[in-house]
Amino acid sequence: MSRRVAFLFLGETLLIPHLYPIVEALAAEAPGLPIDLWVATSVHEQLLSKWTRTLGPAVRIRRAPGYRAFPGYEDGQNPPLPAKLPMLARLAPYLARARVVVCAEQTSLWLPTLIPMPSRFIKTSHGVGSMSARDDRRRRSAWRLLVPSERERRTYLDRGFDPARVVATGYVKSAFRSPTRHKPWFAEERPVLLYAPHWQRHRSSWWRWGPEVIEQLVAQQRYNVILAPHQRLVEKAEDLRPVLERAARHRHVHCDIDSFAMVDGSYTRAADVYLGDTSSQVIEFLARPRPCLFLNARDAEWRDDPSYAMWSAGPVLDTVDDLPGAIEGAVASHAAYLPAQEELARSSLGEVGPAAPVNAARQILEALDQRH
Image 1 (cartoon, rainbow, N blue to C red):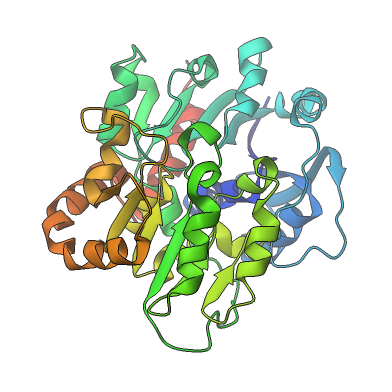
Image 2: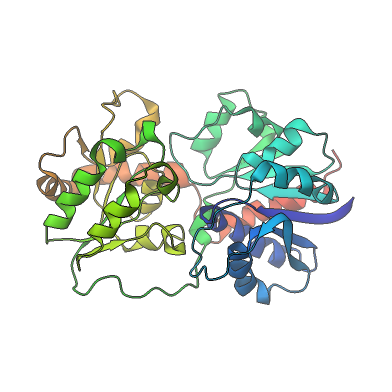
């Protein structure tokens, strides 16, 4: 087995900002270290090819078995993905030659879960928040789990994970700075509101209230509106695309379910107000505290449930009868929620900025050098 590191870019493009800063940090910490970036599609390949030009010849982009080309996909548009389990099965012999394999999703952990692999798998978190599926048995197959914060680490220790195998590195995505240039989204200067519903039906406001929420946001004129739901919602909600296409005809509404701006942090940085349900994007948004408003479309008994800790950051609506009025109320009451927002961001994100991927890269170097 060679002293080689493999990074798996096999999933949705939303995973790229959680992995790529570690690639950059590792190439800087260990110049000349062989690093393979395995990609599933031409979209992944095009993005990474632009960014890796300055990292040196030791960083190689490699096409995974089952790789698919998508001519005409631009701006990092999220492509249809090849079936991942067959791809992983065919990729396993190549990964077995790497000392360390780094992934940001759980599907890839089926390999060390089901197959005796000589490689050490390191999983870094994608997203952050109180609803992560920490009990999945595949996570126990990772040689090391990299999580953003000590708060997040504690949730694993409470489930019996070995403390030596769960490391708080900081929030890696906070160091990602996409070089993608975006056109101006709006013709007029106004405060910007972001609505970002989650993709899972049992956690999302979309199926009960989504179209009604959008109707009210289109009707108001105080805010420019970004409609950028979770990237995977389009897979689950058949009505999403036509509803957004109609909304996008209005000059103060920008809709996106395809471009890389959905996942690179552009919209959470641009927004002045966040409207959502349970998406971890709100934690990214709160890295710079601003007004938040949450939609309790599932009638959750949330007040004493730690899974809904994020809802301490703003008012929670049990109805959307007067959404514009509720938005103004959230803005007016922001000062009352500011301490909770600052604490939530600090305890959830941990270290932010360039130090986070450097911390992760050093865990990879430890995995390379440690004998047991």
